[in-house]
Length: 253
Image (cartoon, rainbow, N blue to C red; front, side, top):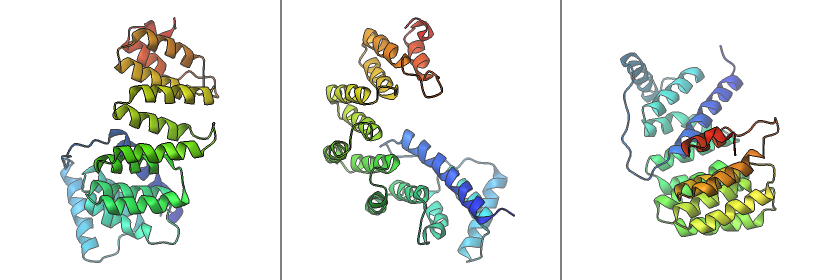
């Protein structure tokens, strides 16, 4: 039998992976619920849901498995019900609070999601995933300008070297709002503040690629290539971008 701590770590790992996927692939278009899975798994899910609805106790392992499969099938309202017992304790792990807010957002409960996120942000004021979810909420509710204003305020409150994640999120939001030059300026500022980090330059190169500025992309990738990580590795996205532009796998950048 797995220990409660091991179950919680497994759940948080699953939640983290789901959140990353959802946030990365978030779209404002209406979503189609995907329910395609193997019949045996479907039957097991239905059996466990009936037990839950009949107020039968599920083991922690069964609840984790049920939550995982409901999420995979996009049955998010039911997933929120299954998640609830883990949220009733005095101290809720950050990942579960984020997951709850994202389920609420995707279930058409934007104000509940915002309330959950605001509570989380009081404990973790500049949590990157929390801020990303707040931005998604603002975009869904037509609050793009307010989102830019709020992120700009948060960015200015932090010292250089402590605001990379917020700066990248702000620049991405500016790009979506067709403020390309403001985004370029932000990427360049972050590149100056983080002289050993290639991410601002890679983000800038992606924007330059969208704009069709091939020579600028080449120059930016050359700069990014001079910023290996702490293990001396070059970010693989450099070669990906170079390959898309036919730049000979960046070896001659």
